[in-house]
Structure formats: C-alpha cells, structure tokens
Length: 397
Image 1 (cartoon, rainbow, N blue to C red):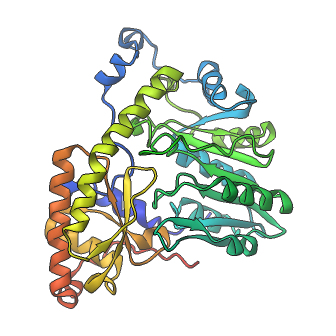
Image 2 (image 1 turned 60 degrees about the vertical axis):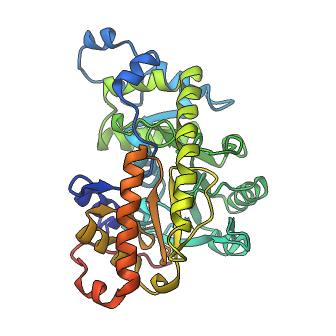
C-alpha cells in the first residue's frame, strides 16, 4: 500500500523532542502514574502481573466498561486498539479499496486522508467554515456533493480537530441522514469528547443509526496518551472485520495499558479526569485570549468550544505567509514547535497547544510572539531563510 508521508506526524515526531518548547501537542497535559494511583490504579497488583500477551481485542473487563458508555452496546460491539489512530486505520483497511469512495470533513486530522488514498479510494471533502461570528459550521451543500452513491465511509471529528468546534444537533442529523441515504458508514472520531470548556458534554453519534461507528481513546480528554489505548464501537460485523485486520497489524494492546484503561473509563474516574481537563482549559484559555489580543492584529481567533488547542488565523502582514514557513521559522529561530494549518487541509491558520502547565504556556506563547513579530517585520527575508527540508502537506481538497 503506497502511502504519502503524513506531513503533520512527521514534523511532530522529528521536532517535538528536539525543540526547547513543544506547542504542537493536541491533548491536555498528561496524567502521571501517581495521579492514576490516587484515582484507584492498584500498583501492587500490576507489579505482580505476568507480562504476557493480553486479549487481542481488549479484555472482557475493559470491553464491558466501554460498552456501558454507549447505550445498547455489548462487548461484541467493541474492539480495543493501540490508540484511536489504529482504530481509524483498521476501519479504513476493512472497508476501502480500489474503486471505493471516502468522504472527509475538512479541516481535520488528515490520517484518514492519506490512508484511503493509499488503499486506492477516491477522497471527497466537505468543509467546516467560519460564520459571521467566527463559529465553525458545516457546509451542508458541500456535504451533499461529497457523500454520493458509492461512498463507503465518511469521517468526522467531533469535537473537531483542529478548530475545537462542536456540531449542532441539526448538523449531526444531516450527516447521518446523508450516510443512510447512500449506504455509507460514518466514522465519528469522538476522542475529544469530555474536553468541553464551558458547554455541555458533546453528544455522541452512537445510537443515531446502524450506519454509525464511533472511535475514541484515552489520549485527549482523558489525558493519558502514553498508554496508547483506543477503541471502536460499531456494528458487530464491522468490528469483527476490524479484529481480523488488527490480528495482522499489532495483534493487541499491552496488558498494562489495558489495566490502566479499565481504571480510567470507570464512570467515577472518567468524570474526575474530565473535570481535571476542563479546569486546566478554563485556566489557560483567558491567558491565550489575552496573548492574541496583545499581538495587535497578527492573529485572529474564535475561542474553541472544546479541545486543548486553538486554531488561529494569520492576519495583517502574516496573512500572505505560508503556514509551513511560519512553523519552520519558529523551529529555527525560537526552538518552538506549532502545527501549520496546511497540515489540516486549510492554509492561513496555525494550531497552538493550550493544554500545558502555566509556565509552559507562558514561555511557549512568548517565543511564538517573538517569531511572529520577526515575520511581520521582514516576511520575505525570514521566508527565504526558513527550513524547507520537512514535508509540507500535499493535501488537495
């Protein structure tokens, strides 16, 4: 399967552990093992656990706890994976091939742009677009054009990565209705559910149709990315096909990660982790908003409804500078990493992490401000000196 270089992941994996300040993260700052012990993780029991293979589709205990989060689901509706990315990957492997069609919401995490293309599927797009208030809303006419007879899979992230937007009930119903009309499955990536800053919990697509498949995991709103646990919730026949592909790919999740996940998704612990996420974001967003205001028009933004990131629009003298050039200049000149909007399929924007500790946030934003000021003063000179040996996105909507 020929795959394009995943520009965003390649840039992050190359630089996130090299720069002095990584502001490209997308989840809340990670929970520590000590915090997990305080939440009920039995460390002594783990110390006595034989480090053999775990159940390849997730232990029954974990699948039962996950099924309880999705009304009407049973353990047979659940596949546990190594992160949400693997969940999305095996779904694409199980459903797509040459001659099939795939529809993708944009802007978005572009894993499920590259994988369908590698499998030989045609990729169609429909956009979220900012309205007069700055809120990102579904382009419903474009949705109708993108999801057509022959479309096998449709992919949305809700809450959205990178905008932090949450679909309205009408928008969710419109997407589901269109999938049903053409016989497509909807993949609703809900990994940011629980990161809502002030609003109510984002409703799940689960239960809206038998054409709905939900993917999620511990990496974002839970704040536990390092254990690499994700999951699929879907029709039992779809999940069975995904398990077959999983057997060929990574076989199964780690036994220790499965044990951590069993604690994290327990109802009381889940709510405590979500409260921790909301508390951090409510403290950080005003700081970020004041920082944007202090840039005197270089960036514009609409505060996100959810997620631990801000998707900001380049304005003023930065409006014509490619986002990849801005990102590479920040690496070179200030040793700080952000994500260019081109890596999400939308030029003219930057994604910046808002989920860090106060000192990390303050230092990271100060570095970014200095770099943006450099570009605003002499964009051509800085662009010419920028690093261009990292892949830019080759996304074609």
